Image 1 (cartoon, rainbow, N blue to C red):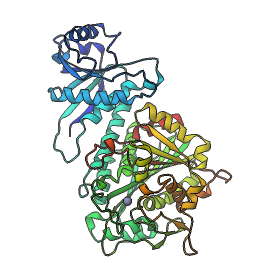
Image 2: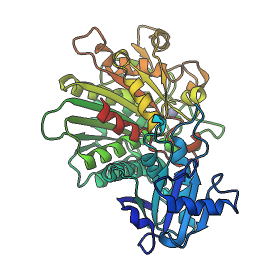
Image 3: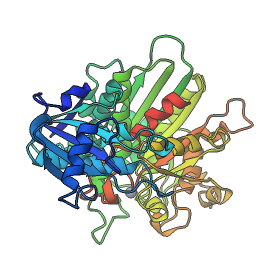
Image 4: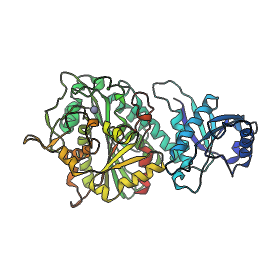
Length: 506
Ligand SMILES: [Zn+2]
């Protein structure tokens, strides 16, 4: 794949002979007060070409590195409803134009409204947009390297760690059903973390999985017969030297293919379901970024549940009652609501870690429901438990997501959501879901948190308990790929960048 690498460059790299072969400017008005030579060039060109400033253009610029100047406008940033994604998108467009023009060493210059807090991270976001723009799925053979030189004083180590994590997240999310089946996904993680200061363990023994992750194993049941589709749990731990101030516990949904199971997805709605592993993919990518940056004071434990929701003679079916790791008897409502079953057991294991941990914070990352897209379009939906709500954790995620071009919508968990999963008979403690698709029921993306809390045992750690534990459930079903298009949309690696920003804020 065409992989982007970042480096810091001095101002004079822009001019004359240099190893750089193009200059890309991302800006709203191209005023460039700090770069009068470049501004003058643009003004001259604008007098003969009205496209300049309105659409991406390439100018012949003999005085500049490589003689190529690519201008990619963000559009008007003044509207009250604009956000920093303008920089991300303009950089994507611009870097693609530079690449198609033959450039492989591109200097990135970013200029926008300095005083507007919305665009505080515009230069960093544009750099990440370059990575997104040139990323290709792992099955596309292309070993081209593209260097992006940063002249706006960005933190190159941080951006490099972010991009490496984002590449891994995109690879894992985008891989096809065979290429990234559970064992292959786990192998990718082993190779990814090989040199990193992380503890990595993989559970691949079917008997152990059935015993310790019974709900997850129910989803995986009809895939166990096919070795290359067989389930895996990947556990990754980061523990820095020195005092620990907070502990993050992250559960990632990795359904490597979702046929729907016995409640089969019909009428063409199955296509694209190899992307039902975006939560586990973002979790792995985030751990890569963390391993590279080695932050102090924070310990992180992640569990990824990798299963294929196959259909076959051994498939689990609605009406089955399965006792999960935390002890709750769960009546299956619909086998296509499988993600919450996978997460519940992971969260139950993480609960045991959280009990002993310093200042624990729990997250689940998952492409969980069609409903979140129905409710919010292409945005991430975040649902808080009571403790996270009191601590305004969701609000922090929302504010940071907005600044890092990964906007999220905040939802509220309500009493109706608990009623939705309440037992209907003496035989069960919980209902996994209604019998139809989540997209067709009101509060379809909120009520799964009521299930997750009770099925994992995290509901015991409520506000009045001895150890209240905050928990954020992050539904990326319609934001894990571009344009909410699971078939052809490029994976976005969301919410990796926001999680890193949160780490230094909490
Ligand atoms: Zn499903």
